[in-house]
Length: 485
Image (cartoon, one colour):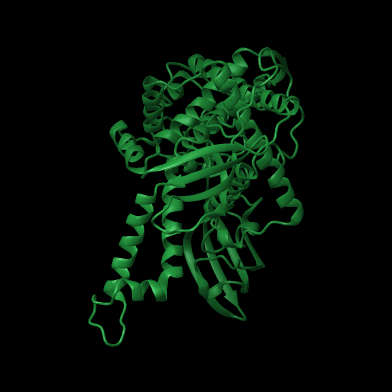
């Protein structure tokens, strides 16, 4: 469309866009609007489509001019905004008359994303907390791996029933003299009994061949609904005791877990834990660098950018709610929680501006190779072909958004590579609910996890916990492994 535009600076981030739309564009849009209306309007004495335009103009001119102005302003602004760093919603502040024989003028006020020059971005002094990998950490991780090789064996010694055992019993349940259950051989799980929850409390401490009678209350979660919540007299006799036996670490067990030997398994797990600790520290160092630069560089940030970040934070929390099996519509925030979210959203908006500034100052760009490498990484994480990810990105028009994310990641890496880093012991774990959130696709490095985390992040957590996982597994499979750990 034909238009001219001039930009007037009204504040550090505020701009007024002055548009002039050519009279020919205005006349063409008015003619189309009146033709459409002439086909639709019904006036007594005139056949459909034969109502004179002057009569239409006399009755409907204000409505038509309003609609035409809306179309012209939307088209001109949308076209202009493609090449402008707009942030937030535009507001029409001035407008001329829609006539058709003269140019149409109007003005729009909108905020621009600030283009800042970041001071002190080279050699930022930051601390990188890296936890030392202890023998206890390694033993715990090995134990979790070995647990995946556990097998059920019958207890041969004279030990009593312990929590976690499976016990074959003779079981009778009676109530007021009436027999409800009589099973000469039924398996009772002492920690996850499904049919007779409550009976397992009698079994703990009993030995093979012993018998006991005592009143118990059957749990409400029983799959035998007829006796749910009922208080009964339970008579149990232990026939056999079975236990989960975790094997000792040896070369044979290590090979079953895809290691060359027990020594190789220990060394590999130690290396994984060390890499995880280092990645966790680097992620925190990235946040520390951004915090330092945000605090030391003062600039105005558009409210629209903050609103976008706030919306993204709320959407993320609602998604986590859904992953936890709860209705995200029921998620409510107190005034204090909303204030905290706004603080985090403002930090994220400012951090994004800082990263833009550093990238511009250091000529950090995203190449086609960078884009293809990221797509290959996404394909591996999701267990899908590269072509499928490529097709999705093209279909959704998400290439620009992905490039922006890659540029942020490259800029964060540049800042860390050029920072003055001091490695320190991590502080005691505390509530991180108010920690700043930045736009980054890096692994969080958290030992806690949620189902909303990315596959790569879940892989890191699972490996740190000593679980047998790999990149070929799907995200649900990794989550299942974490849940069963």
